[in-house]
Image (cartoon, rainbow, N blue to C red; front, side, top):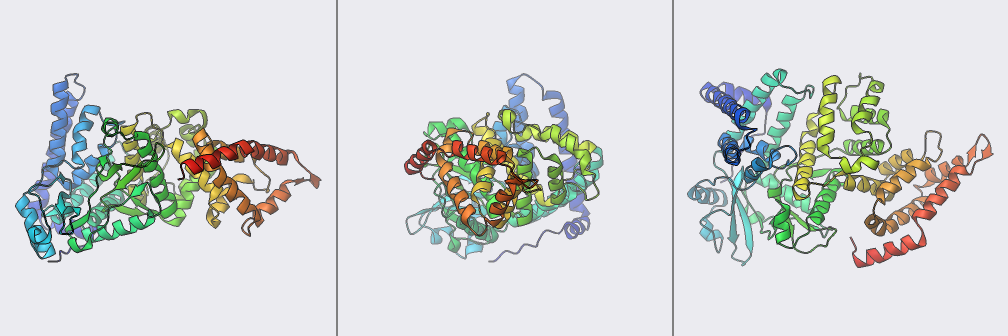
Length: 552
């Protein structure tokens, strides 16, 4: 049997629910009363030092979210990845929202499989268990043995899911829009649009045929990356409400102790996780929008620098346009170079600021929020610090969150939260900035070359030695990067200089030697000294040895 779901429609779904007041009114009242009771309990017990009180409160929080259903569980999962926002004793309970929810009736699961695949599980598989191995917000997973003697993960969708999500997304949008003027929020006009994005993503996520296509596309992007593993999609055992993939034998990225118990190095998985996330955003333009610990596994193999990582659950995916991708890279470069007016222009282009906004007024506030985010203060930087400062900034200036960035922000924040669970001292910029620097110095595409030229040369075509030095310092801020990245950067630089694309670089280099019709060698000498120091024979030799010992 082929299941059919409609696409999300904010207006159409609202009309659908309003025409059913017997569903709409009781559900709204139930949600409001549930949150009022939760708020009161947190108000009176949230600061208690009694461990039993906090344990009972965390259990109550879990039960409330679980009882409210899939939409609220999805929101709770986002909180479960933020150890910097949620108390540790609550966090432990909220982690169960990822894949340890109450399962639905096994007989119903068997019936759904037979309806969707046209045969009973016993006919389709060599072995089918009596209980699921994991149960999440939208479905439950069975570890099953095929007739080819291989193990697969069979995910069966929860019953009546389309109705539950359609109803609750409408109500969430209604309540958020109605209550937003009374809440301490300033995200511009976007709260309804953001919930629309959330609704579209959920509607896509319950279409398992679409998830199968997403898995194939994602696997193709990482096919040449030995550290990122994507399970094989088993199309013959899949439908709109059933999805089957190869089984993953790994350790969930839940906490540091669990990894260390299995002789795995937590920092290696953080690095693979963050680098693969950056690649999704800045290279592929296609990303996993739900990277919580239940959807990522640490695998055996890899090394101390890069662990082997497996992604699962490809229902919530999103894309970023080429224009937005390049503007984000420019924005990071402008933060590195303390160019806050240009950063404000980037925000304007991305839609965080209106075209009428006087950008000059934002230079000092942005400098206050982001100034020193690299350099000496990088050790104190994380997204929570910036988020806190930015929240204050948004009260005074007309920043808004474009709806198309809702899932991007969710993915980045979830990923940093996951990293913080494994290493509380983790700083995302220590990996993100060198990645951007390396991309600028080694990617010879037209778009990236244009950004690099903006960094290396000023508007008059003169070399900005201090900015080149800043880029190299960021990339080679530790011995590991010097050893592994030196030769790729040197090769890319030489290729660029002698290539057709390098004509603009060669022209600007020559023009920078001439100022006021005179030969000016000061900047050229500084640049040569910087290159000679960075790319010394000793450093090149170390890089060659490192690449032989542990090629990436």
